[in-house]
Image (cartoon, rainbow, N blue to C red; front, side, top):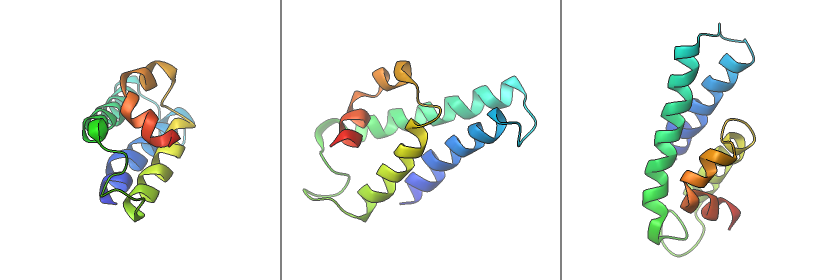
Length: 95
């Protein structure tokens, strides 16, 4: 659950706040935020390589947390090109 909150949701929200000028925009800060989000999604993609769910064979609270964080990220800074780089995350999200 901490991974969903700390590594996906907060990285997306930080990029979102920069993008909407709620935090002063600087290109290096924005790029770093998006890069961190992308690297966390790559880690999750590797975890999901041979799994349908995060823990076990059924949906758990961990899956709910991850799916919620992904819904926020996919509605904003995870564009189509980035989604192509993390096919296991996309499959997981759409399951």
